[in-house]
Length: 93
Image 1 (cartoon, rainbow, N blue to C red):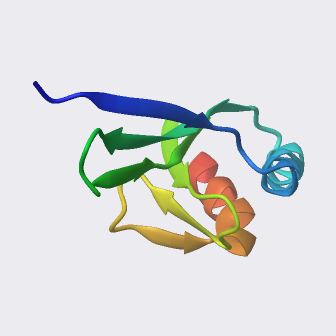
Image 2 (cartoon, helix red, strand yellow; image 1 turned 180 degrees about the vertical axis):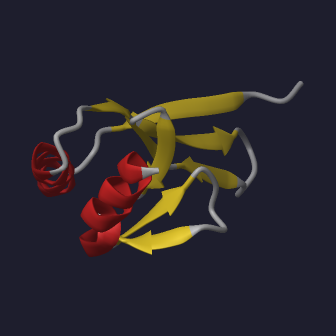
């Protein structure tokens, strides 16, 4: 039987503050769902689930200690410094 061990990872405080500041400037609110680390017992297989940040019904993925944020999936990358412009452009459409 496969035993999966799940450990929650709390979002880094500085990343949380950056996201809150960006949302404040963009007049939006955010919801943060902490990521996790999943390990398969008795193997060396580990999966790091990113934090999910929901802003204006768009799910962003973020990792602690990273300056990049991902839009919907890990193939659409955006610099954290460009997130405010992205949100403003999305709200205009």
